[in-house]
Image (cartoon, rainbow, N blue to C red; front, side):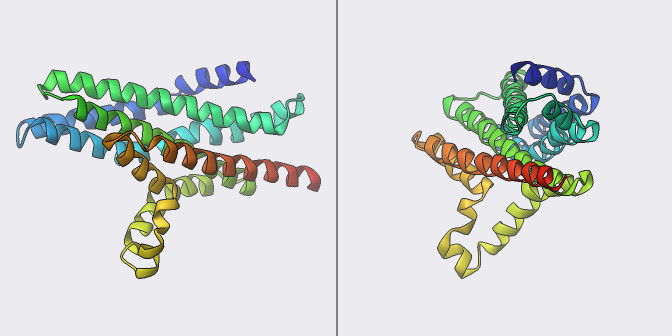
Length: 247
């Protein structure tokens, strides 16, 4: 399984689409920092705007391209079926793809965080430890969101054999559902029962707040990861099993 993961990571990192989207996200950070520097500038503005970018547009762009690179391309090439046909168990194959996505996403967001620190030095933003903590945990939580959403959208891909629908599912998981939950938060039932807190982004927001303020959010992030990655693994396994029985 290790060799499969290594080969997959090498293939994905060499994809032009992944490289271009990463450059685009870093370019947005540079543009935003330079814009702020010539309008309203201090370390707080830099930190807040960079956090908004890494949580918002960059997560959507990276989430879509990483899902396509890790799952959609493998589906088109029928590589998962080929690996299973050579004797590797379905649970191991599913776990390998989830690990692919997690390792790749964590690595990219680690680079993003380092880039933001370099950008802060280049633009003269005097970040203190609290500012750096905000940016670091923003990257951690965004990596969690992308990994969980991608794993769940993969289940849609394998269930429907429809790449376009699975990409839409990824977009819905990353953007549409959180937006709807935010709107419904004003309704009494959703507000009183804290429905949004139990979605992927809800775990992320609560974990971020806890980790930044007093370090108490790690358990929340671990719980969200276990819940949603476990759900994605189970759904994908059941889908593969059902299709095998139908043959």
